[in-house]
Length: 401
Image (cartoon, rainbow, N blue to C red; front, side):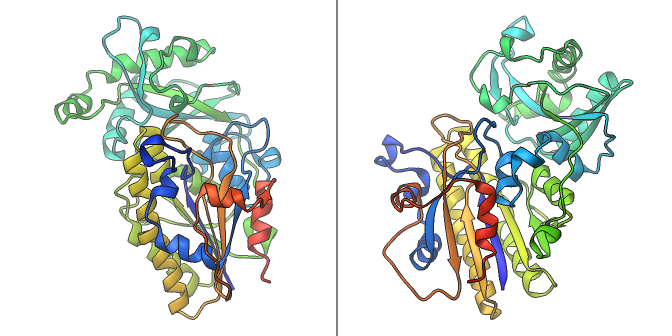
């Protein structure tokens, strides 16, 4: 038996009037997911423990079977694992986003958060910008490390974990009362604006009609994580396929194989086919039992507030990830169980995460039943089936009935 999790990050949503009261998932053309739902099981799962912030960090730990209340030590430390940053027990890791702030105001505090991802800036451009930041801001006790796209890492030796605001939670808002309370962090963010605002990379981005990456934004602070190996917990050899450092870091921390797919970039134009083929290959050509395929696109489109692009991301997931994986495993003669779900909702109307339950689809290739249903939030909720503790979903998947 082979086991697959396909995670459409932020795929769940709220009904939209312009879609006739449907969600993007409900509106999207998803023939493969609907086919699997008709033969499988749908329901709702609560991936975010009560009292914890909704995010891909806690939610994906849950989906992998790790109770976030026990294992979560912060988001950035997980990303640091992926980047290969050597963390000491006394280090604090922080996410360093490149963001776009408004530029017409005189004071930094009066600026508005325009874009949490600087138009999904490329890693190559980011590396040049981070080098400029490092030259002026890297000092004793602070070190910057390049990640992927707009997502980078700051290590603070003997630092302190504090409540820091996520930039995607304050889109369109003034940043004055959202800045870090720690004077050094706040001063570094202010200085980063002066370093970046007229950098040649940003001047070129403006000429191309793109958002400039004109400030660093620190958040997601945490300590060195201590995760137990996935194979020791489940008895299954697992592999991770994702374009983002968070998921790769979770894989490193849980001793899973990390598969890097060329052209996988976390955006709408990612290498879907490459990710699907890598999933089939690791299960059919290597001695692996489990693969986790993560797609960032729906979440990014939710943050952008674009229903049309989110629908496109979901349709791409269905046609270019789910269908080829299911058909590839079936064609190879493999019995398999597959779970499809979001980690959390990222409603386009809110442009940030919520902690609401998300719909799951569980399919077993040996199933012979067929019912009239589709995979979406509405029909999943109508079943009345709810998994209250998201980390128990993994055990449910691994039950080979």
